[in-house]
Image 1 (cartoon, rainbow, N blue to C red):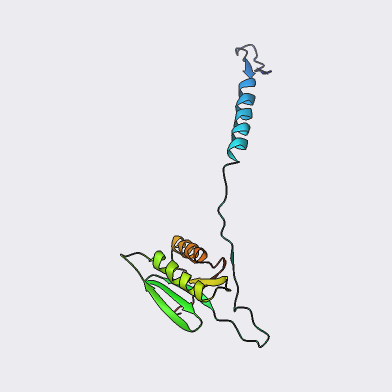
Image 2 (image 1 turned 180 degrees about the vertical axis):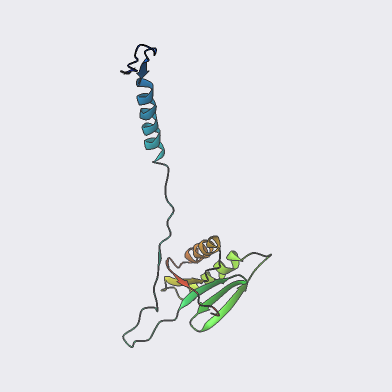
Length: 154
């Protein structure tokens, strides 16, 4: 399979005849398509299932169940259960995810029927810290996460 190009030269110009062999180009494209199809099997996207909810579900008496939340800030964490708040300070200059997981596991043991928790953070918190906080919260037994924006001063 080839393409012939004729320059159509006149008297003064030398005729330009070239044959382009298209078989190597077709072979290259076939190999590229096969390579992309084969490697597409191993590419997977990571996904975190996160919702955005306001207040918790209400009972028949319209009482709001106590909120379980983790506030992420630059100085550490604040674990909130209802109206109680417990700070989890930084350890060795970094956020202490292990202590956070232990605290959340203790809350899960005290509230075994709860599966929801909220993670609150300001816009200035690095995304990696939020994801690691969400991982610690999920591993403690709270798979139904809500990601909320922390108001300044909360």
